[in-house]
Length: 110
Image (cartoon, rainbow, N blue to C red):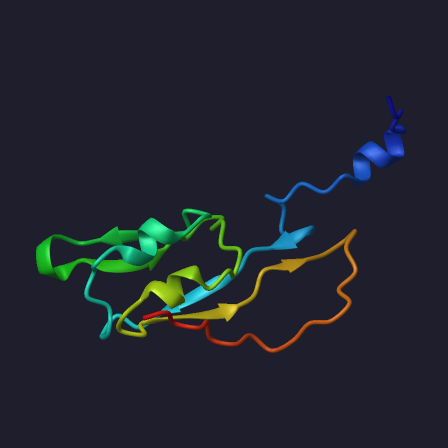
């Protein structure tokens, strides 16, 4: 078993701290959103939820510590094109980014 020094233990990142990792952000166009809930069901980080009653339901992003991984699954599922990823998930501190490309919209399957 590997022994970890106290200094190394203090440097282990905790991902609920924005110093180590910045969660992604999605932008939801409320005029296009019909509240179908497909994005909420597909989100692996449970970063989205539905708000409202009946026909007034709209998708929203969690305000406090969203677990958005910028996977674009919600944007791929949205039939109306109401969701776009505005800020990608970003590691900091221990991790070196080798190549950061521009975010692209996901492929849609029909």
